[in-house]
Image (cartoon, rainbow, N blue to C red; front, side, top):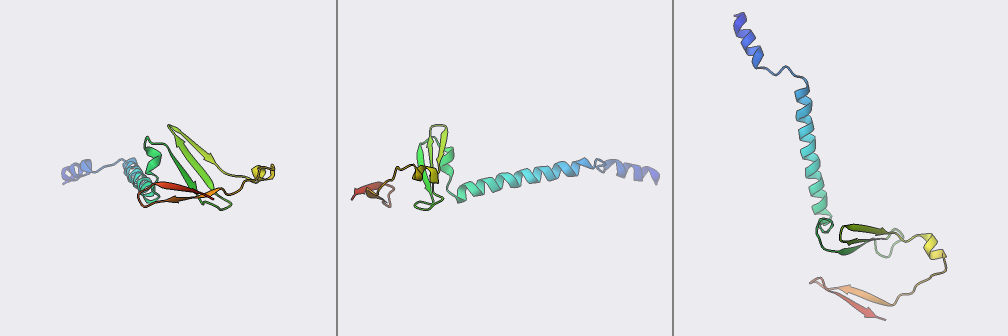
Length: 109
């Protein structure tokens, strides 16, 4: 009887760290799935393409940001109060419209 018990115990995993490695694998799969979901949800697939692009976040508001990608370089421009107080004021010179097919038309005023 003792021999059967020793055979059964040999088959069991006696390493307590194996549970930790399995949890790590599950966490990694969850993290990758979350990143893919966020990228697809916010339509940020342009960041991974080879094309150059410009994106404006919160247009016309105080926390507006302009993000441009040129090749491998990504630039982020945030207007600040210092730039506005330097005396360089701007004025509106026209309006840009984006059509359904993606074309942008500029109409000067």
